[in-house]
Image (cartoon, rainbow, N blue to C red; front, side):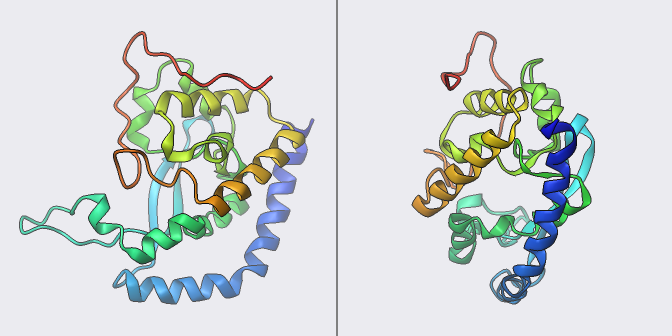
Amino acid sequence: MYAKFFKRLIDFILSFIGIILLSPIFLVLIILGIIFMSGNPFFMQQRPGKGEKIFKLIKFRTMDNRKDVSGQLLPDEIRLNKYGRFLRSTSLDELPELFNILMGDMAIIGPRPLLVQYVPLYNVEQRHRHDVRPGLTGYAQAHGRNSVSWEDKFAMDVWYTRHVSLAVDIHIIIDTVKSVIKKEGISSETSATMEAFTGTPEGVEPKWKEPK
C-alpha cells in the first residue's frame, strides 16, 4: 500500500515544501556556482529511471570544464575543484533533484540514477534496480556510497526494491544524515568519484549480506 500509493504522495509534498524552504540556499548556490564554475552552475544529464525510462537529471555542477591542449576534458580529480568537493561532501550538489522528485521522475528514497550506458551492462538481477523510481538517496548511498564495489551497491539497490516500506525509508534517511555528517564514502579508494562500471565478470558475486 505504501509503495503503490503513499510513497509518491509523500515525495511530492516533501519536495514541494523543500524547494520553498530551501529557495534562499538555491539562490546562493546558483550565484557561487556561476563564480566557481565559470558559467552554468547546473549539470544536466540523461539518466534511466523506473522501467529504464530516460529522464533529465539536474544537479549543481561540481566539476569545471577545464580541458587539455587537445580539447579533451581533464581527469575528474583535476576538474573537481575545492568548491565542487565542498558540494559533494555536504551533498548540496543533489538539491536540484528536488525538482526531479516533484515532477515524478525520482523519489526521495530509491536506487541512485546512474549513467544510461550502464543499462546494457547490467545482469538480469542488477536490472531490477529499475523496478522503482530512482532516489535522491538510497540504501547504497547510506551504506558506503562510492567506497563499496559496484556489485555490492547493486545488491543493496535490488534488496531495497523488494523491501520498500515507510520504516525502511525512515532508516535510510537517518543513515544518510549520519553519512553526510561523517562525510563517508564520497570517493572510491582509487578515484576522486567512482570508477566507471564495465559490467560484472561471470562468477563475481557481491560480498554484501542482506540485513536480518
